[in-house]
Length: 271
Image 1 (cartoon, rainbow, N blue to C red):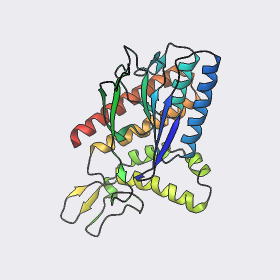
Image 2: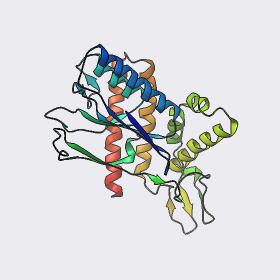
Image 3: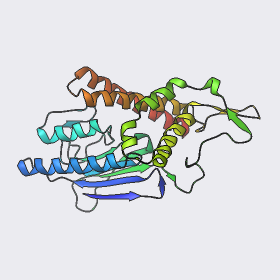
Image 4: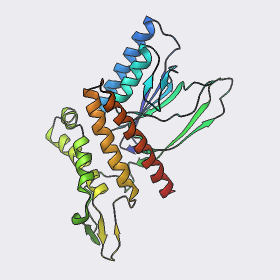
């Protein structure tokens, strides 16, 4: 496994490239356990970063559309890791023969605008996965490092705010983890401020003096995406506590599908 952190974006981008040999013996189980433990530690320690896990995992028995698997312990280990960390698997086409062996896992699915299949490189028998990520440069004026407040020519329309959206987003935040990894007062305030600013920018419209109303993202569909993300995270937290609950697992699958539909509609409307 090779991990790289890109600091030129906001939030920071963590990319892990992984290869798991196609073995299913005791050594393979120990390797899988070590791999998942390592990835879990990095993801939990970098809570505010965007994470991508890409590579050939050689686990063809997982049905990613249904979030089920018919394989052995190795397949179940990766599937449970994916669900517990609220990750999304974006590859929907076979990468070798009829199997999906090469994966793209991320915790911020809305940052990916394109996933496609390309011809193999050299003599490889695996296809090439081409995916595009939309990120904000750290030196961009759109980076939310300072409080998001209306300009001198506009003001918030609090009476038109979507408080349900804001409530769901803030309720789904993992506040104990935020406090754990930001123990100093100033660190916690910055992390809390960042979460709160995003919730306000998504849920509260801004009115300009010229009479034109807009939101911080200028996209109405982003509210639907935000709602889907908040609901998905909330259900995922419940599922992490009750992984045996089949009804809750089905509800999580439904949230995943609704989130993907809302995301596709958002990208289509903003194209």
